[in-house]
Amino acid sequence: MLGMNNPVDLVEKITPWRESWKVHVKVVKLWYQKNTALDPSQNLLHMVLMDEKLHKIQATIRDELISKFAVSLNEGDLYLITNFTVLPNTGLNRVTKHRFRLLFQYKTSVVSVVSPRITHSGLCFTSIDEIDQMTKDHNFLIDFVGIITGVRKERDVASYGKLIKAVVLEVFSHG
Image (tube, rainbow, N blue to C red; front, side, top):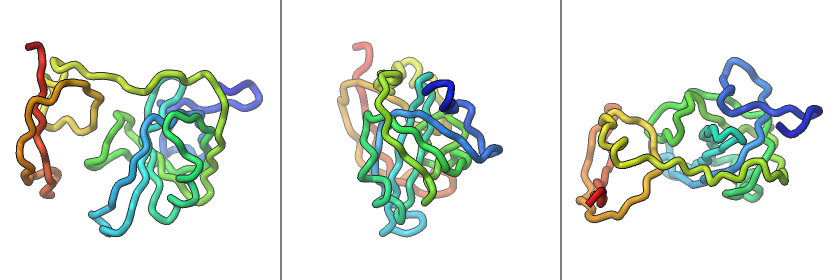
């Protein structure tokens, strides 16, 4: 928490059933994506945000607001963020286990803060044994480090009723 006069909410508590959230988070990862499902020319800016308890949530900025926020957001930096919309975390772009994701609005406020409270990198590695036990329906991304020993040719795979491009990576594990 930032202090008694300025309480913040923990990421794990965020739901759409309340409107005024205030989170103190670190931008763990930031990336751009084309929104080909709606409009191939439209970009989205995605982020993984993490609070001091190491809970993560995904946040998205739509094309028309990217220029408003992108200049002030940097991976590894900490921010106080308010006035955003909370939506269900669904679809093929799930990068956190959180049930919800944040959507920045024109009124969203992003204030840079200086704080040593969130020093963790944000990476939470998954072992190859855990990966072996996952079902094909595992629907969010994980952090994994390994030696890539092979890459199979790109192919079309059915997912949620749509065809998507997939590349299989072979990794070295336990000899």
